[in-house]
Length: 83
Image (cartoon, rainbow, N blue to C red; front, side):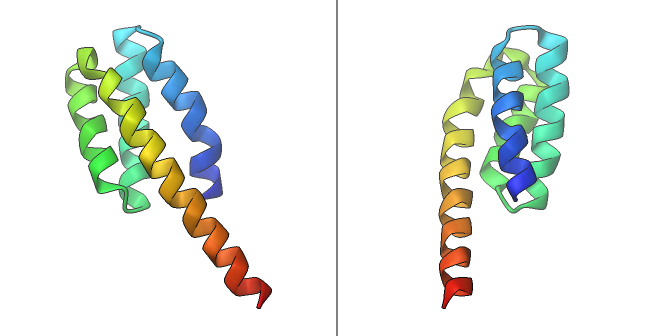
């Protein structure tokens, strides 16, 4: 999860960059990572962007929501471990 969060911002920036080939490549990688971690909605959006790079703006909101959820989960886990 921490690796995903660390790479998320870089991938989001690359997707926002506008180069269709780069967008498709980053969306593909982000899709795979999101699926592995259970962020199914984000993965589905990335799949759409991978095939149609003009939909890249959709990624940002969903990536932000996934990031919030994962950070919250990490916080909860650290609280449980501290007990």
